[in-house]
Structures are given as C-alpha cells and as structure tokens.
Length: 186
Image (cartoon, rainbow, N blue to C red; front, side, top):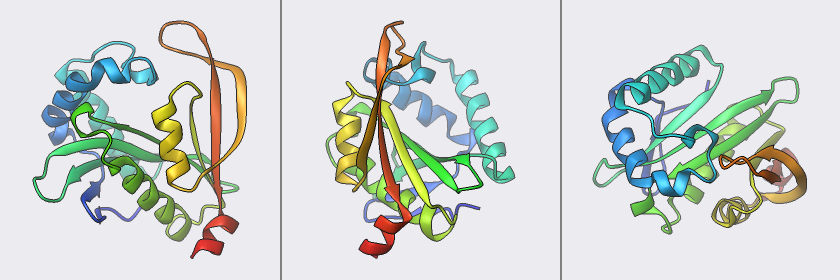
C-alpha cells in the first residue's frame, strides 16, 4: 500500500477523497484549456457530480490496492494544486506509471516535480518497484521537462502511438527511472 499522507517540502500528498470534489472541480474548470490537449480524461468538462463519482472510484481503488491516485495540497494554505498517481502496470516486475496535472495558477513553481520525486521514492522504497515510467504526448514539452527534472531518462518515442483529444495521431514519449538508477542516487 502506498504510504499516504506524505509531506514534501511544500505539499501534502494524500489519497483521493470524494469530499474533495468541489476543490478538484474548481481546479479542473480553471485549467481545462491547458488540460484538454493532453489528458484523455479532459476530452470534455465533467460536472461536479461526475468529479465526485470519479474521486469516489479512485478512493475505492486506492484502498483496494488496485490503483494509487494522489491529490496534492499546499502545506501553507491547504489549497488543492495537483493530481497525480502511481499506477500499477505490471505487478510481476513491479512496474508503475506516474501521471500528473497541475492547476494553471500554480504551474511553473516546481510543485509537480516535487510530487513526482516523492512518488518515485515511494515506488521504490514502499512498493518494491523495479521500474517507474512517465508517458506523455511528445509535444507536451512541460510534461517532458517534469520527467527530465525528476531524473527520468527518455527511452523511446513511440510514433503514432495514440490519438490526442482532437483526433490527431500523437507520438508518446516514454521516460523511465530504474531501481538501479534509484540505488545509485540513494
């Protein structure tokens, strides 16, 4: 089980809760134009009730150990700032994937990188990961820079790997962090 809540230098990372739906909905509405090109779940703007149902499902999957969605709040103010998660992709390895988004008004402050670094550490130390990946649209330079700042290495660009929300074919950048990388850095 992912050991949450977790405090970083500026954030409190915790498991999802349906009670957070109003603040998450507000952040999604604020950030929808930025999220829509990149996030499959942002193809259309959800209602508050849809957000509440999504968070309830994420909360249930977290407690069942099936998927580990994470919400991030500023320590100082308690403001919701980002969504992320550690998603199991292959328990036999074990291999996980980290996804993330940040509300528009809080971008450019290194908060997502801080959260990704904390999740990466938890993946190796608490979940026994041997591999953690970040996959993103290769055109999403902000997301690519987060992976690189967090120490991930670009392993591949999968051409015409998926469809973007506008229907166009997209390339997927695959970044990875291996246990050997983690052990070397301590």
